[in-house]
Amino acid sequence: MTRRHDLDWVRVLAFGLLVLYHVGMYYVTWDWHINSPAAGPALEPFMMLSSPWRLSLLFLVSGVATAFLLARARRDAAAANGRVRFLGPRSWRLLVPLAFGMLVVVPPQSYYEVVEKLPSGYHDGYLAFWGRYLAGDGSFCRGDDCLVLPTWNHLWFVAYLWVYTVALWLLLRLAPEATERAGARLDALLASAPAVLLLPALWLAAARLLLVGRFGSTHALVDDWYNHAQYFPVFLLGFLVARGEATWAAIERARWPALWLWLGSWVAIAGYFRIYAEADPPQALRLAVRGLWGLDQWCAIVAILGFARRCAPGDGPALRYLSQAVFPVYILHQTLTVLLAWHLRPLALPPLLEAPLLVVLTFALAFAGYESIRRVPLLRPLFGLKRLAPGPAAAAGDPERGHRQAPRTASGGG
Image (cartoon, rainbow, N blue to C red):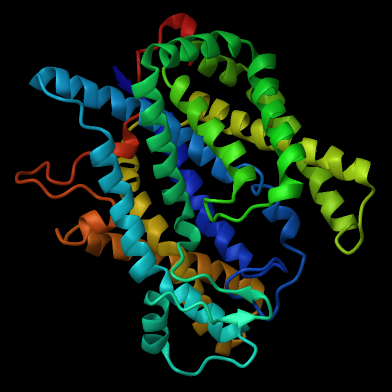
Protein backbone atom coordinates (compact mmCIF):
# COMPACT_ATOMS: atom_id res chain seq x y z
CA MET A 1 0.00 0.00 0.00
CA THR A 2 1.28 3.50 -0.86
CA ARG A 3 0.00 6.95 0.04
CA ARG A 4 -2.07 9.06 -2.33
CA HIS A 5 0.15 12.09 -1.99
CA ASP A 6 -1.56 13.70 -4.97
CA LEU A 7 -4.82 13.90 -3.01
CA ASP A 8 -2.99 15.16 0.05
CA TRP A 9 -1.69 18.05 -2.05
CA VAL A 10 -5.12 18.69 -3.57
CA ARG A 11 -6.64 18.91 -0.10
CA VAL A 12 -3.97 21.30 1.16
CA LEU A 13 -4.20 23.58 -1.87
CA ALA A 14 -8.01 23.52 -1.93
CA PHE A 15 -8.18 24.71 1.66
CA GLY A 16 -5.52 27.32 0.87
CA LEU A 17 -7.72 28.54 -1.96
CA LEU A 18 -10.50 29.18 0.57
CA VAL A 19 -8.32 31.80 2.24
CA LEU A 20 -7.83 33.61 -1.07
CA TYR A 21 -11.52 33.32 -1.88
CA HIS A 22 -12.68 34.71 1.44
CA VAL A 23 -10.28 37.63 1.20
CA GLY A 24 -11.77 38.23 -2.24
CA MET A 25 -15.28 38.23 -0.73
CA TYR A 26 -14.35 41.43 1.11
CA TYR A 27 -13.82 43.26 -2.20
CA VAL A 28 -16.81 42.17 -4.31
CA THR A 29 -20.39 43.37 -4.36
CA TRP A 30 -21.75 40.04 -3.10
CA ASP A 31 -23.15 40.04 0.42
CA TRP A 32 -20.60 38.96 3.03
CA HIS A 33 -20.03 39.59 6.73
CA ILE A 34 -18.33 42.89 5.98
CA ASN A 35 -17.43 44.53 2.68
CA SER A 36 -14.66 46.91 1.73
CA PRO A 37 -15.61 50.56 1.14
CA ALA A 38 -13.89 50.03 -2.23
CA ALA A 39 -15.89 46.88 -3.08
CA GLY A 40 -16.84 46.53 -6.73
CA PRO A 41 -17.39 44.02 -9.53
CA ALA A 42 -13.83 43.99 -10.93
CA LEU A 43 -12.75 40.86 -9.04
CA GLU A 44 -15.97 38.92 -9.53
CA PRO A 45 -15.06 37.12 -12.79
CA PHE A 46 -11.94 35.76 -11.12
CA MET A 47 -13.97 34.67 -8.09
CA MET A 48 -16.20 32.79 -10.53
CA LEU A 49 -13.16 30.81 -11.63
CA SER A 50 -13.49 28.69 -8.46
CA SER A 51 -17.03 29.38 -7.22
CA PRO A 52 -18.70 26.40 -8.94
CA TRP A 53 -16.30 23.68 -7.79
CA ARG A 54 -14.10 24.47 -4.79
CA LEU A 55 -16.41 22.93 -2.15
CA SER A 56 -17.42 20.01 -4.35
CA LEU A 57 -13.74 19.16 -4.74
CA LEU A 58 -13.26 19.16 -0.97
CA PHE A 59 -16.26 16.91 -0.45
CA LEU A 60 -14.99 14.47 -3.08
CA VAL A 61 -11.53 14.32 -1.51
CA SER A 62 -13.17 13.90 1.91
CA GLY A 63 -15.12 10.95 0.52
CA VAL A 64 -11.87 9.33 -0.61
CA ALA A 65 -10.32 10.01 2.80
CA THR A 66 -13.33 8.45 4.51
CA ALA A 67 -12.92 5.26 2.49
CA PHE A 68 -9.35 4.80 3.61
CA LEU A 69 -10.05 5.84 7.18
CA LEU A 70 -12.72 3.15 7.34
CA ALA A 71 -10.39 0.59 5.77
CA ARG A 72 -7.74 1.44 8.35
CA ALA A 73 -10.26 1.16 11.19
CA ARG A 74 -11.26 -2.28 9.92
CA ARG A 75 -7.62 -3.41 9.71
CA ASP A 76 -6.96 -2.16 13.24
CA ALA A 77 -10.05 -3.95 14.53
CA ALA A 78 -9.06 -7.17 12.80
CA ALA A 79 -5.54 -6.98 14.20
CA ALA A 80 -6.87 -6.42 17.72
CA ASN A 81 -9.74 -8.88 17.30
CA GLY A 82 -12.12 -6.12 18.37
CA ARG A 83 -14.90 -3.90 17.09
CA VAL A 84 -14.49 -1.43 14.25
CA ARG A 85 -14.18 2.05 15.77
CA PHE A 86 -14.96 4.58 13.08
CA LEU A 87 -18.01 6.78 13.59
CA GLY A 88 -17.23 7.64 17.21
CA PRO A 89 -13.65 8.83 16.62
CA ARG A 90 -14.67 10.57 13.40
CA SER A 91 -17.50 12.39 15.16
CA TRP A 92 -15.12 13.51 17.90
CA ARG A 93 -12.67 14.90 15.35
CA LEU A 94 -15.42 16.87 13.57
CA LEU A 95 -18.03 17.83 16.17
CA VAL A 96 -15.71 19.07 18.91
CA PRO A 97 -14.03 21.62 16.59
CA LEU A 98 -17.42 22.56 15.16
CA ALA A 99 -18.88 23.26 18.61
CA PHE A 100 -15.79 25.14 19.77
CA GLY A 101 -15.68 27.10 16.54
CA MET A 102 -19.33 28.14 16.82
CA LEU A 103 -18.93 29.22 20.44
CA VAL A 104 -15.51 30.89 20.32
CA VAL A 105 -13.98 31.28 16.86
CA VAL A 106 -16.96 32.39 14.76
CA PRO A 107 -18.63 35.04 17.02
CA PRO A 108 -16.26 37.89 16.04
CA GLN A 109 -17.43 37.50 12.43
CA SER A 110 -21.04 38.03 13.50
CA TYR A 111 -20.06 40.91 15.78
CA TYR A 112 -18.44 42.94 13.03
CA GLU A 113 -21.30 42.08 10.70
CA VAL A 114 -23.72 43.57 13.24
CA VAL A 115 -21.50 46.62 13.79
CA GLU A 116 -21.39 47.30 10.05
CA LYS A 117 -24.88 46.36 8.92
CA LEU A 118 -27.30 46.99 11.78
CA PRO A 119 -29.30 50.08 10.74
CA SER A 120 -28.87 51.81 14.09
CA GLY A 121 -25.35 50.49 14.62
CA TYR A 122 -24.17 48.48 17.60
CA HIS A 123 -22.29 50.18 20.43
CA ASP A 124 -22.29 47.79 23.43
CA GLY A 125 -18.95 46.15 22.76
CA TYR A 126 -17.91 42.62 21.95
CA LEU A 127 -18.45 40.97 25.35
CA ALA A 128 -22.06 42.18 25.51
CA PHE A 129 -22.62 40.93 21.98
CA TRP A 130 -21.02 37.56 22.76
CA GLY A 131 -23.43 37.07 25.64
CA ARG A 132 -26.39 37.75 23.36
CA TYR A 133 -24.82 35.51 20.70
CA LEU A 134 -24.55 32.58 23.12
CA ALA A 135 -28.11 33.20 24.26
CA GLY A 136 -29.38 32.88 20.68
CA ASP A 137 -30.59 36.48 20.46
CA GLY A 138 -32.53 36.82 17.20
CA SER A 139 -33.13 40.57 17.38
CA PHE A 140 -30.23 41.67 15.15
CA CYS A 141 -32.31 42.49 12.07
CA ARG A 142 -32.35 44.61 8.95
CA GLY A 143 -36.02 44.63 8.08
CA ASP A 144 -37.03 40.98 7.68
CA ASP A 145 -33.40 39.80 7.48
CA CYS A 146 -32.41 38.66 10.97
CA LEU A 147 -29.08 37.15 11.96
CA VAL A 148 -29.47 33.57 13.19
CA LEU A 149 -27.33 33.02 16.29
CA PRO A 150 -25.34 31.01 17.18
CA THR A 151 -24.06 30.24 13.72
CA TRP A 152 -21.35 28.21 12.06
CA ASN A 153 -20.54 30.56 9.14
CA HIS A 154 -17.59 29.07 7.21
CA LEU A 155 -17.63 25.95 9.42
CA TRP A 156 -20.79 24.74 7.70
CA PHE A 157 -18.51 22.42 5.72
CA VAL A 158 -17.64 20.53 8.91
CA ALA A 159 -21.31 20.10 9.84
CA TYR A 160 -22.19 18.81 6.38
CA LEU A 161 -19.20 16.47 6.32
CA TRP A 162 -20.28 14.92 9.60
CA VAL A 163 -23.88 14.45 8.41
CA TYR A 164 -22.69 12.86 5.17
CA THR A 165 -20.36 10.58 7.12
CA VAL A 166 -23.24 9.43 9.31
CA ALA A 167 -25.43 8.84 6.24
CA LEU A 168 -22.66 6.79 4.65
CA TRP A 169 -22.12 4.79 7.84
CA LEU A 170 -25.84 3.95 7.95
CA LEU A 171 -25.73 2.91 4.31
CA LEU A 172 -22.81 0.61 5.01
CA ARG A 173 -24.57 -0.90 8.02
CA LEU A 174 -27.81 -1.51 6.10
CA ALA A 175 -26.40 -2.62 2.75
CA PRO A 176 -22.67 -3.35 2.93
CA GLU A 177 -22.52 -5.80 0.03
CA ALA A 178 -24.66 -3.65 -2.23
CA THR A 179 -22.43 -0.66 -1.49
CA GLU A 180 -19.34 -2.69 -2.35
CA ARG A 181 -20.89 -3.82 -5.64
CA ALA A 182 -21.94 -0.24 -6.43
CA GLY A 183 -18.33 0.87 -6.09
CA ALA A 184 -17.09 -1.80 -8.48
CA ARG A 185 -19.80 -1.04 -11.03
CA LEU A 186 -19.17 2.69 -10.79
CA ASP A 187 -15.46 2.15 -11.35
CA ALA A 188 -16.26 0.16 -14.48
CA LEU A 189 -18.78 2.75 -15.68
CA LEU A 190 -16.32 5.63 -15.32
CA ALA A 191 -13.38 3.76 -16.85
CA SER A 192 -13.33 5.81 -20.07
CA ALA A 193 -12.36 9.47 -20.34
CA PRO A 194 -15.69 10.54 -21.95
CA ALA A 195 -17.70 8.78 -19.24
CA VAL A 196 -15.72 10.17 -16.33
CA LEU A 197 -15.92 13.61 -17.89
CA LEU A 198 -19.61 13.74 -18.75
CA LEU A 199 -21.68 11.47 -16.48
CA PRO A 200 -21.03 13.27 -13.16
CA ALA A 201 -21.32 16.61 -15.00
CA LEU A 202 -24.81 15.63 -16.15
CA TRP A 203 -25.83 14.93 -12.56
CA LEU A 204 -24.50 18.27 -11.32
CA ALA A 205 -26.11 20.13 -14.22
CA ALA A 206 -29.46 18.44 -13.53
CA ALA A 207 -29.24 19.28 -9.83
CA ARG A 208 -28.69 22.95 -10.63
CA LEU A 209 -31.40 23.06 -13.29
CA LEU A 210 -34.00 21.42 -11.06
CA LEU A 211 -33.18 22.77 -7.61
CA VAL A 212 -31.19 26.00 -7.48
CA GLY A 213 -34.15 28.17 -8.51
CA ARG A 214 -36.31 26.65 -5.77
CA PHE A 215 -33.89 26.28 -2.88
CA GLY A 216 -30.82 28.41 -3.53
CA SER A 217 -27.82 27.94 -1.27
CA THR A 218 -28.35 28.49 2.47
CA HIS A 219 -25.68 26.38 4.26
CA ALA A 220 -28.33 25.93 6.96
CA LEU A 221 -28.38 22.11 6.57
CA VAL A 222 -32.12 21.50 7.03
CA ASP A 223 -33.36 23.38 3.95
CA ASP A 224 -30.29 23.32 1.73
CA TRP A 225 -31.52 20.79 -0.81
CA TYR A 226 -29.60 22.08 -3.81
CA ASN A 227 -26.30 21.85 -1.98
CA HIS A 228 -27.13 18.40 -0.64
CA ALA A 229 -27.94 17.28 -4.19
CA GLN A 230 -24.46 18.28 -5.34
CA TYR A 231 -22.25 17.72 -2.30
CA PHE A 232 -23.46 14.37 -0.95
CA PRO A 233 -23.24 12.61 -4.34
CA VAL A 234 -19.67 13.80 -4.92
CA PHE A 235 -18.75 12.76 -1.36
CA LEU A 236 -20.28 9.35 -2.03
CA LEU A 237 -18.55 9.17 -5.41
CA GLY A 238 -15.19 9.81 -3.75
CA PHE A 239 -15.87 7.04 -1.25
CA LEU A 240 -17.00 4.50 -3.83
CA VAL A 241 -14.15 4.99 -6.30
CA ALA A 242 -11.43 5.63 -3.72
CA ARG A 243 -9.54 2.50 -4.76
CA GLY A 244 -10.99 2.29 -8.26
CA GLU A 245 -7.90 2.37 -10.41
CA ALA A 246 -9.89 2.51 -13.65
CA THR A 247 -11.65 5.72 -12.62
CA TRP A 248 -8.46 7.47 -11.55
CA ALA A 249 -6.67 6.42 -14.73
CA ALA A 250 -9.59 7.82 -16.76
CA ILE A 251 -9.45 11.07 -14.80
CA GLU A 252 -5.77 11.37 -15.62
CA ARG A 253 -6.39 10.78 -19.33
CA ALA A 254 -9.21 13.33 -19.37
CA ARG A 255 -7.23 16.11 -17.72
CA TRP A 256 -6.56 18.19 -20.85
CA PRO A 257 -10.10 18.10 -22.29
CA ALA A 258 -11.40 18.83 -18.79
CA LEU A 259 -9.11 21.85 -18.48
CA TRP A 260 -10.28 23.42 -21.73
CA LEU A 261 -13.95 22.69 -21.03
CA TRP A 262 -13.58 24.21 -17.57
CA LEU A 263 -11.92 27.40 -18.83
CA GLY A 264 -14.31 27.74 -21.76
CA SER A 265 -17.39 27.35 -19.56
CA TRP A 266 -15.91 29.80 -17.04
CA VAL A 267 -15.56 32.46 -19.72
CA ALA A 268 -19.19 31.95 -20.74
CA ILE A 269 -20.50 31.99 -17.15
CA ALA A 270 -18.46 35.04 -16.14
CA GLY A 271 -19.63 36.88 -19.25
CA TYR A 272 -23.25 35.97 -18.52
CA PHE A 273 -23.11 37.34 -14.98
CA ARG A 274 -21.36 40.50 -16.14
CA ILE A 275 -23.85 41.21 -18.94
CA TYR A 276 -26.92 40.46 -16.83
CA ALA A 277 -25.68 41.92 -13.55
CA GLU A 278 -28.60 44.35 -13.44
CA ALA A 279 -31.06 42.81 -15.89
CA ASP A 280 -33.12 39.66 -16.15
CA PRO A 281 -31.80 37.22 -18.78
CA PRO A 282 -34.08 35.25 -21.07
CA GLN A 283 -35.31 32.12 -19.30
CA ALA A 284 -33.79 29.80 -21.91
CA LEU A 285 -30.39 31.44 -21.45
CA ARG A 286 -30.70 31.23 -17.67
CA LEU A 287 -31.36 27.49 -17.89
CA ALA A 288 -28.53 26.97 -20.36
CA VAL A 289 -26.06 28.68 -18.01
CA ARG A 290 -27.28 26.55 -15.11
CA GLY A 291 -26.46 23.46 -17.14
CA LEU A 292 -23.11 24.96 -18.10
CA TRP A 293 -22.40 25.54 -14.42
CA GLY A 294 -22.55 21.77 -13.80
CA LEU A 295 -20.10 21.17 -16.67
CA ASP A 296 -17.73 23.82 -15.29
CA GLN A 297 -18.03 22.34 -11.82
CA TRP A 298 -17.09 18.79 -12.75
CA CYS A 299 -14.54 19.55 -15.47
CA ALA A 300 -12.58 21.72 -13.05
CA ILE A 301 -12.49 18.84 -10.56
CA VAL A 302 -11.36 16.34 -13.22
CA ALA A 303 -8.66 18.71 -14.46
CA ILE A 304 -7.32 19.32 -10.95
CA LEU A 305 -7.37 15.65 -9.96
CA GLY A 306 -5.91 14.56 -13.29
CA PHE A 307 -3.00 16.99 -13.23
CA ALA A 308 -2.39 16.31 -9.54
CA ARG A 309 -2.19 12.57 -10.23
CA ARG A 310 0.31 13.19 -13.02
CA CYS A 311 2.34 16.10 -11.63
CA ALA A 312 1.97 16.45 -7.84
CA PRO A 313 5.18 16.07 -5.85
CA GLY A 314 5.44 13.15 -3.51
CA ASP A 315 5.73 13.02 0.23
CA GLY A 316 8.07 15.25 2.18
CA PRO A 317 8.35 17.42 5.28
CA ALA A 318 6.34 20.24 3.68
CA LEU A 319 3.37 18.00 2.87
CA ARG A 320 3.41 16.35 6.29
CA TYR A 321 3.47 19.73 8.01
CA LEU A 322 0.75 21.29 5.85
CA SER A 323 -1.51 18.26 6.14
CA GLN A 324 -1.43 18.61 9.92
CA ALA A 325 -1.90 22.39 9.79
CA VAL A 326 -4.69 22.64 7.24
CA PHE A 327 -7.69 21.99 9.50
CA PRO A 328 -6.70 24.41 12.31
CA VAL A 329 -5.77 27.02 9.69
CA TYR A 330 -9.16 26.52 8.03
CA ILE A 331 -10.99 26.97 11.35
CA LEU A 332 -9.12 30.20 12.15
CA HIS A 333 -8.77 31.88 8.77
CA GLN A 334 -12.11 33.58 8.14
CA THR A 335 -12.29 35.17 11.58
CA LEU A 336 -8.74 36.45 11.11
CA THR A 337 -9.63 37.88 7.70
CA VAL A 338 -12.65 39.75 9.09
CA LEU A 339 -10.69 41.10 12.07
CA LEU A 340 -7.76 42.20 9.93
CA ALA A 341 -9.95 43.79 7.26
CA TRP A 342 -11.90 45.77 9.82
CA HIS A 343 -8.83 47.08 11.63
CA LEU A 344 -6.98 47.93 8.41
CA ARG A 345 -9.82 50.21 7.29
CA PRO A 346 -8.57 53.35 9.07
CA LEU A 347 -5.36 53.16 7.01
CA ALA A 348 -7.41 53.59 3.80
CA LEU A 349 -4.96 51.46 1.84
CA PRO A 350 -5.62 50.97 -1.88
CA PRO A 351 -7.10 47.52 -2.55
CA LEU A 352 -4.11 46.48 -4.69
CA LEU A 353 -1.95 46.87 -1.59
CA GLU A 354 -4.48 45.96 1.09
CA ALA A 355 -5.69 42.67 -0.45
CA PRO A 356 -2.24 41.00 -0.71
CA LEU A 357 -1.50 42.26 2.80
CA LEU A 358 -4.72 40.65 4.04
CA VAL A 359 -3.74 37.34 2.41
CA VAL A 360 -0.25 37.37 3.91
CA LEU A 361 -1.41 38.39 7.38
CA THR A 362 -4.27 35.85 7.40
CA PHE A 363 -1.93 33.00 6.50
CA ALA A 364 0.78 34.21 8.88
CA LEU A 365 -1.53 34.53 11.88
CA ALA A 366 -3.37 31.29 11.10
CA PHE A 367 -0.12 29.33 10.95
CA ALA A 368 1.12 31.10 14.08
CA GLY A 369 -2.10 29.98 15.73
CA TYR A 370 -1.49 26.43 14.55
CA GLU A 371 2.04 26.49 15.97
CA SER A 372 0.58 27.39 19.36
CA ILE A 373 -2.36 24.99 19.15
CA ARG A 374 -0.30 21.92 18.29
CA ARG A 375 1.90 22.44 21.35
CA VAL A 376 -0.97 22.71 23.87
CA PRO A 377 -2.62 19.35 24.64
CA LEU A 378 -5.87 20.99 25.76
CA LEU A 379 -6.25 22.89 22.48
CA ARG A 380 -5.44 20.10 20.05
CA PRO A 381 -8.84 18.34 20.06
CA LEU A 382 -10.61 21.72 19.81
CA PHE A 383 -9.01 22.14 16.40
CA GLY A 384 -9.29 18.59 15.15
CA LEU A 385 -5.79 17.40 16.05
CA LYS A 386 -5.07 14.07 17.69
CA ARG A 387 -4.18 14.05 21.34
CA LEU A 388 -0.47 14.06 22.01
CA ALA A 389 0.90 10.61 22.73
CA PRO A 390 4.10 9.97 24.66
CA GLY A 391 7.26 9.57 22.63
CA PRO A 392 8.82 11.23 19.58
CA ALA A 393 5.90 10.32 17.30
CA ALA A 394 3.48 12.35 19.41
CA ALA A 395 2.09 14.51 16.66
CA ALA A 396 2.30 12.00 13.83
CA GLY A 397 -0.69 11.02 11.79
CA ASP A 398 -3.62 12.98 10.46
CA PRO A 399 -6.82 11.10 9.59
CA GLU A 400 -7.48 13.34 6.62
CA ARG A 401 -4.20 12.11 5.14
CA GLY A 402 -5.52 8.57 5.04
CA HIS A 403 -5.49 8.32 1.26
CA ARG A 404 -3.89 5.05 0.25
CA GLN A 405 -4.02 2.95 -2.85
CA ALA A 406 -2.51 -0.21 -4.20
CA PRO A 407 0.87 0.37 -5.87
CA ARG A 408 0.61 1.32 -9.52
CA THR A 409 1.71 -1.11 -12.14
CA ALA A 410 3.34 -0.07 -15.38
CA SER A 411 -0.07 -0.17 -17.08
CA GLY A 412 -1.77 1.92 -14.41
CA GLY A 413 -0.57 5.29 -15.62
CA GLY A 414 1.64 7.65 -13.66
